[in-house]
Image (cartoon, rainbow, N blue to C red; front, side, top):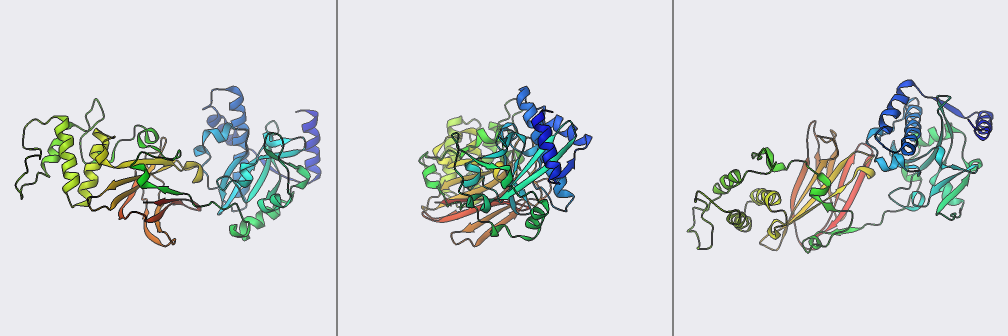
Length: 411
């Protein structure tokens, strides 16, 4: 420990700051989670940050408060970054954790986005110093967002706000009272202005950066259709024979077949004929479930086919208390100038199933509830399908415990 650290420790003791004992299992968990990184400097940074998170979690738990974020699910770049970890979720509040690397010249530095950005701003900024050799952490103090903003601080040359340690509230009992008895609405955070994602623009191949191709975000996750059909063991794709058998079930027999319609009774159909037959059913059937089944088949065998509509997905993990899930939206034009919309939530990373009680909620333009789907144990996705007209607006919420992410859409 350096002389500076010794003086700081003595100063903190004089302030009667709370210390948090770190247990052997804390060091084991920090070692395990930081070991994912190859760079030695990144490993150490992750090690200290994880110990800080574990200290905060223990301090909250001892006071009957809960850190909602699973530490092992936090995005890796937050763990190895020198920036604070923001936002964490505690009892409906957003919390920003600052650790050793955020202490600069007897003060703290906070990136501008973590004060002014709706995505990162927090109700409380908490500073914890980790003393590895002493096997303890010190809760130095905290500051509320509104108190930080009222100080009219200036940004430094790298765009960070600097605040002297003397400006922090050292009385942790005040933090407990705030978390237990204050409403999150009492501390105003930057408003997230509604950004409406125009789904019909997707049909013209115009996408915003956050919405990624489903294949890129979901990786090798098997398609929904595999629950009903057999995959080719070597390619992990739907067997062409199975697709053709599926098509034959929808052969139109009630009406005389027109000359352009593919004859599905033929023993061998080319891939082109299979695609043509799928599109014919997609464009003629009045059964909505059949149309979506055909669309999903096309996504697997010919993802770029224009008749299959468009689907995109967004990673919600950073915004949903670190829980790795993705929201997928698909839009499919209907023959009557209306649009079919599919909303679906998937688990991400190594997770096979969604967390139980995770909810997908649909809202109309006025914020009134349209539907609510709740994940059960061992659900590998949840979804809702509906029909909309051009110009319709709606919002989708993904909710888990006290964490909620809302996305807004216009047809």
